[in-house]
Image (tube, rainbow, N blue to C red; front, side, top):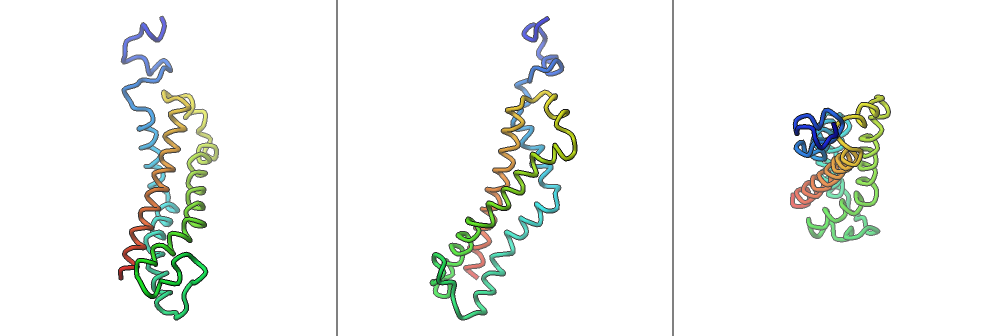
Length: 158
């Protein structure tokens, strides 16, 4: 019997991926769940939320401005300059570091735990697994950036 002649409910048990499960979406949700349970991911997102307020407090106390950064000379004149200063620094140093750490952890955790054999022999293709993991890393990166941007805007307005 070929996979084409099998009933639809038996396709996934023979190794042929079933289209019903939405392979990439399933892997994406599972990887986001695993990321949400990691303490370092929660701490990094909390840092993205609190860091702009700490920067705003530090800049409010000192009289000098970070004139060497883009929009730094306008920090004491307008609250809208603070998000630009924070995001320009974070865009160069912080967010690539956080993204690399999380994206590396998404793939290296399978190697560390010895679960690659199990993951790669399940009913999802390697492309679906890779795409789902990539989307999870992208979702984390975008959500960290949005959280940092909103927190920076609120800190600048305060």
